[in-house]
Amino acid sequence: MDMTRRAAGGRSLPKIKVTAEDHARLTGLASAAIDRMPEVAAYLADELDRAQVVRAGKAAVGFVRMGCEVEFRDDTTGKVQGVTLVYPGEADISQGRISVLTPVGAALLGLSAGQSIDWATRTGAGKRLTVLGVREPAFA
Image 1 (cartoon, rainbow, N blue to C red):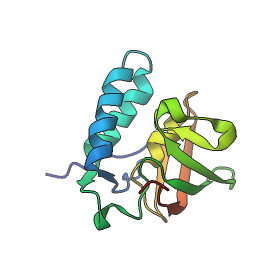
Image 2: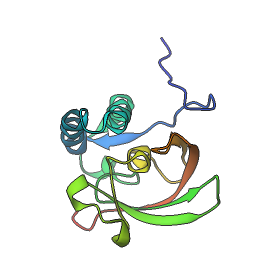
Image 3: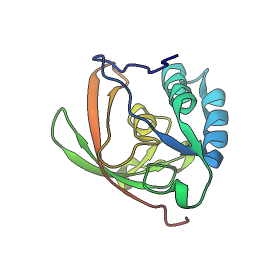
Image 4: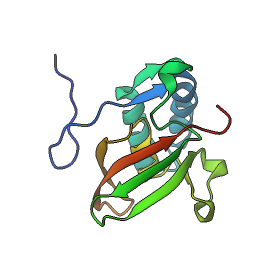
C-alpha cells in the first residue's frame, strides 16, 4: 500500500527523520497547540506522523532536529537564510531562532541537506525551500 502524501503542486513529500525524543516532545506540543494554532499544529502533527523515528546517536545526525542550525534557500525568491530550530518559548526572530510551531519551522523539521519541501505561509501563500546545510546543536 503506497501511503506517499503529496505536497501542494503534486510533488511527493521528502522522507524525513526525527529523533525519538523530539518526536515524543513535539507530539505533545502539537496536541497542546491544536486549539490555539490549529493549522500549524495539524501540519506539525502530520509531519511527525510521516517521519522515520530514529534513536539518538550516530543515526541522529545530518538532518534538521531541535536546536540545529539550518541554512536554507527560499526557492521562490532565491534568498538564503540561516536559522536555529527551537521550541516556541525559545523563539526570537531577531536572533534567528524560529519556532517549530511556525509553518517554516514545521516544514524544516527532519529534512537533510539537498532536500526540498513545499509549504504554505500563515497567509496560505505556497512556498518551496531547499535545505543547504545542517549544523548539529551545541548541546548534542
